Image 1: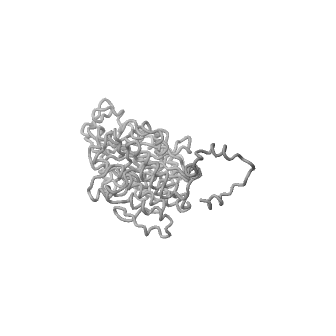
Image 2 (image 1 turned 90 degrees about the vertical axis):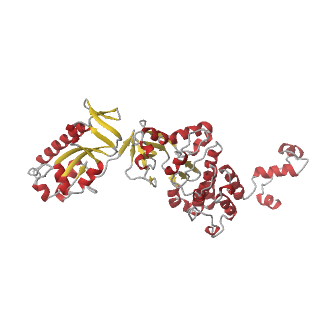
Image 3 (image 1 turned 135 degrees about the vertical axis):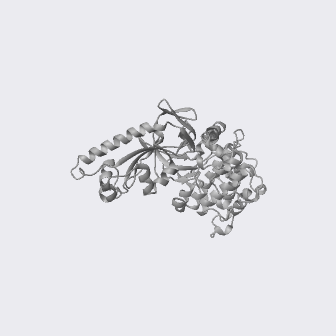
Length: 471
């Protein structure tokens, strides 16, 4: 529904490509039957809106003398399509979306295309106070702003109107969504716009099939290969089974889980240094689980890493991931990425998918520990960021994972996690202490042997300070 200054439009938008024609009361797109004519449907809605609005005005004393607004029904074609096969009777109500926008921005073109309106509507347009009150009451919408878009529904999921993330090239947008009957069942819904892809083949049904649903396929491949990995990934919840140009997909997540970009702004400052280290360790473990299966993420960044205190980390955006047994997107994957620029892209040197992940996860850990990504394009490690030397034991680690030459960079996130653990280890665990006793104090080889050789005479008080002094 579009309420303009002097017209009310009832519109059905079709984002269709290819050949569109009408036969036997239905519309066909590229030979596929798409159901009844949308022109007939929109004409019926137009008639009902006009009749209801007319009755609404006549039923009230203060509006009885007003002219009924012109209600116009249109089908707007948003995609590149050939509509020459549509019947002549319906063509007048079918317009190209861009043409309609140009018409709507010109009062003269509106009048030329849709006819004159009653003089009292020219004198007092629908943007005036009187008509705003009338139409707000009639359409039963909030008064400020006067008309708001309704929530979109996707197989029982209600999507919020404002996106939480938009791809740099607009290829997809993501929204918070929740199950209509179970509001606590939250999801992240991704809505694609394949018209924004650099390669036009992704605007075809065959091309879309290469990327639409690929994240779900990668998820199930990883789960089948390593069930441990599943706990680190957002779980697919629902998707567009028809893989249309408006393809959408949804992934379950907890309400408290936040993208890294939001987590750094709202949560990280309240965490202690030890808690930040643990979140970083869990992030490394998540990516390491992919590498241990022979896979690589390739799009790790503030948009695809989800965190929840104290130790929960999840990954999303696997549509461009590398798997050894799956079909790779090759060079086409770069148009779908939203992460930082890698040094090997600028230097034009080869590197393995896992080494690319190591650099990206190093940037993410830098954000968790220091509150922001490293400076530079590509990002570069600078120890001056650690003013208090709070993480001095990790300076060498950052230098290794953020190495610009991929050949000198740590090979996998499994190796990066191992080195991270060694760098952050502060004292030996009780198990290590016992092992050291058993090794160094021959002939005692086990705790059981020690108990037999030195039976308990009386209870004693455990004194950790004494033990520390002893070591």
